[in-house]
Length: 410
Image (cartoon, rainbow, N blue to C red):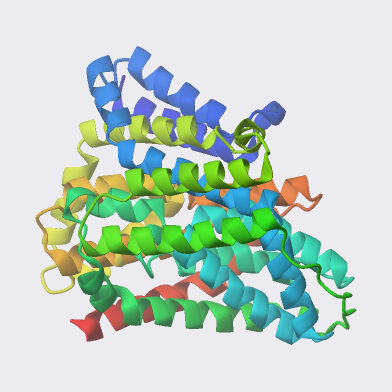
């Protein structure tokens, strides 16, 4: 298979993931593209299986996070928190915007950006219905943009973080030292840009919902499980452990605990998990393997070496653009291959580009694709062109602010 054919398969597959022709699920074109690449000889079967295996920690991480997120939704934790936020807004559209933004940051930081997209988005949709908002989109856009902007506060905030650093994941102290200022800059700049672009919709009058029912026993247990998971993952990160297995254990343990005390079968929860995410990610890893075989990782490394003194900017901006072209998980894996020996500062710039760059387009990250799916379930659609016009205003200032902060942090 020629290089042009490989790129064509990859781009068409990603395009079909986005537009879902004939109503197909997102994982189908990703897996079909991977199979075509293997059958066409772009990647031998053994290397393809090796590429799939590289995502082992990501699969475990995603499974654990999806279980926890669905458990929180099933036991009413997000609905309860959303009700409190809606009441706290007290009819103010701008106050509700700020409160939802803060809540989205917390969910992204401690439950990952995919949880923000998959589970918090429906909670926000229910919240804006409860306050009878005429324009719901400003609040729902928060879920998409914060899912990427706040996704490098902690190592657990984005599966792409596991891919970029792989076995060289910094411990928690070094992570916060490298990304603390950049994360604050990205979250702040994204808030200001979103507020500016949505300011007209934030002048509407909102209703104040009634009293919020207290959490059920299962909800309280789930909340405790989420707290325990946070402590476990922060400890694992501080010790430099891989995060996939602890996340899966936290998800399974919390689900089992709630099942025992509420006498609700665990498999009922398993039916709600978006399992198609896993084969989709596996397909993306195979596509990366084919592109890597064409020398794309080496081309990235050469490009970085060609700009001595400006590596941080070249890597950050370049990978932000590449993430929107081929999705940030494949871009992160390529960055990990190409920049493994480039030094911590350059890898940090790569991670910022991979995590924050996808706020430009709906093709940029898995979280944004999952957010689109959640919107469709609530009868709302956002076109690729509309998102791109908004992303062109929101993403660049945040990316530049984050890279400047990284340079200042040294």
